[in-house]
Length: 184
Image (cartoon, rainbow, N blue to C red; front, side, top):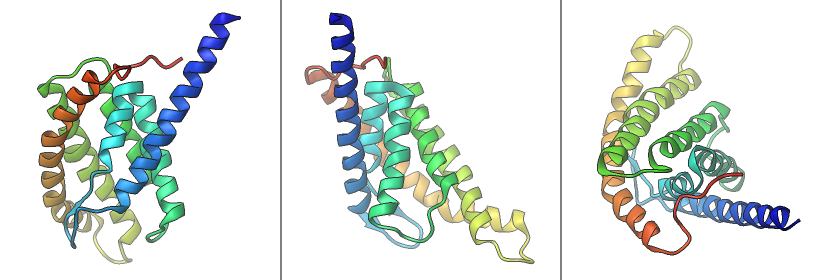
């Protein structure tokens, strides 16, 4: 009986934390630091990384994926694209793989390189190409044009994340009860 009560308390705590992080991700996504035709600088990655640190890939995926859906419902910009939502969830999973149990500068840099320079650059560019290509346009040329347009975005966000994530994780580790938690 006591074990079930403790498990319920942990589940409620986890859901509450994930809901707060989703709300923060939505708000931070709307508060763009900088945005022009080629670069969009936002700090919406912070709650995703926090969720991944606390609850692993599952927590990161939940905050990133559902945060994207909630962002669309609150402030739609264009059509909702499920593939991009799944890409965001994948980014949350990747942060969880790298940052849940262990952190070090190498793991942080690898998580950023994989999420920004592989997933965001190439996979998101693929979805954007599939959405915006017109009939008669060579797919491969159009795709590589999209990738080329997004390189600066990925480089800028990689630098920002490599600067922001280490002190954020150290701060999380210093504050009580924020060490990585097990998901039941």
